[in-house]
Length: 203
Length: 188
Image (cartoon, rainbow over all chains, first blue to last red):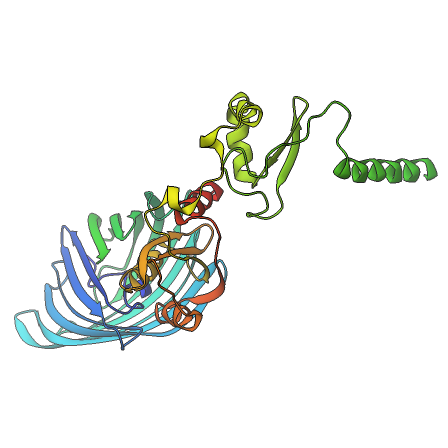
C-alpha cells in the first residue's frame, strides 16, 4: 500500500555517532532502513533502505540516502524541525529496471503531548514515479518517562500521486520505551484495509 | 465594604504573623532536612511547610507531600526519633562515585529519541561515569568520574551538537542518586 516509509524522523539523524534502524512490514509493503549519523557531520544521516509494494504497480528499490536537518527550533517544551533528504539507487517496476531516486521534505512540530508532521516525498522508479504526500498527527494519552512505556495514538493521511489507490488513511498505535519504538497501523484505501507493523531503534 | 476591607487586612496580618510564629501548642520542626527524602531543606527551593497533628512539618518539595500523606505516622515517628538511617544522605553512602554532579536544563528535550541522543552523546565522554535524563524536568544529570571536570563550554557544545539548546547548568551538592530520585519524584 505505502510506497515508502512515512516516518523519516528528525531525531534519527540529528545526533553525532548514532546508528539507526527502521523496519516496516505489511501485507503488500515492506521497508527496511539502516543508517548512521557521523561525528563531524552533525545533522546529517547516511544509510540505505529498500522497499517494495505490491499494490497497484509492483515496485522494488534499494536506495542509499543522505538526510540533512536543515533547521531545528527548540523551546522549553517543544521542538520543530525541517529535514530534507535525497537518495539514489536501483529500482524495478512493471518489468523494467533502472536508476531509482528519492527526494523528501519533512516539517514537524512536537511537544510531549502532541506531534504533527508533514512529509512530501518524490520517488523516481522506472515507469512508476510518484509524489507521496503524508500528514500525520499524534497524541500521547499520558506523559511517560524515558524508562517507561510511552503510548502514542496517531492518525495518518497519505496521498500517492499516480498510485491509483486514492487517499490512504488510518490510525496507528506507537509504543516507545527508551530507544525502542514499536508501531502498529491499520490503513484504509479504496483497495480495503491493510495492517502494518514497524520497529525503529537507535543504537 | 469598609468592614470587608478591614476583615481582609486583619486576615492578611494574621497570615503574616503565622509565618513567623507557630500557633500555641504546635511543636516546631526539629530537623534541618526533609523527613521524607532526607534532602537538606532549601536544596529544592522553598520548603513546603504545614502543620499535622500539632507538629510543624517541613518538606523539601511538593512531591514529598504525597509520600508524607500516604503514611504520616511513619514520618512523625521519624521526626520524634531521628535515627542514623534518617540523617541526610551523603554522596559516599549513596553512590560509588564521588565526582562532581552536573545538572543541565535542556530546551527541546521532548521525546525518547531526543533522550537517547543526548544520553549517548554524554555517555561516550571519558569524564562521565553516569547519565540520567528526565523528560518532565527537561533535565540531563551527569555523574562525573572522580577528579574529572567538564568545562561549561564543552558541555554546551555537546548539547548543541546533539541538536538541543542548553538553558541552564548547575552543580547540586547532593549525590547523583539523590538528585535522580528527586527528579523522579517530581515527575507528574
